[in-house]
Length: 270
Image (tube, rainbow, N blue to C red; front, side, top):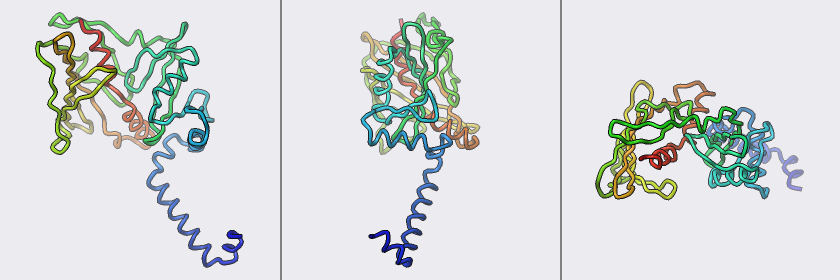
């Protein structure tokens, strides 16, 4: 009845259509970079619909055999349960890559953000077993032995101060965090929990030649001593790339997690 009424009263229908078109245009203008970041948006829209109205926490995207969609909140736990049901156990994380191993092969999962609310997971078989080969053991000049990854599984994040510098000091753990109201993007100290271990993290940022160089120092208490891990990463400005690379750079940056890598390094220190 309402539809027939609107058709007969074009003076009412046309303004409504104009308003709807305007809202749709504004929405596409504001969020087109997210909506079309994977090219054809329909597989993602279909997946979001299935997650929203279905009972599953993970759905396979219809345009691929190895891409899956989860909600960002709780996504890693969802994917871990998903892989465990298929006989894989989580073994490691490097940047935005997650390693899972079964009795006969290793699988690498990489994740990309699809807006703040959803994550796309790509599953690839790791024939080179790089989760093992990627890590190496070194003894530094102070006689400290530790393991570290020879490279990070990231295309748009580079290591410049590597391998990390490891020091062990006597002392009591404390962390004077930077108050939010006086924090500066160039020098921030924060405290974070990584796999039930507390770290005091200082980050100093410097901009140069289209990139940001971030110098990290992680401090953790262990056996009445303080273990410190220091290194520098280079983050290029994603806006300097063309549209396709910019989307890939931004997505990788949102998924990149160096905390887990540092935590594993600390656990190998002898």
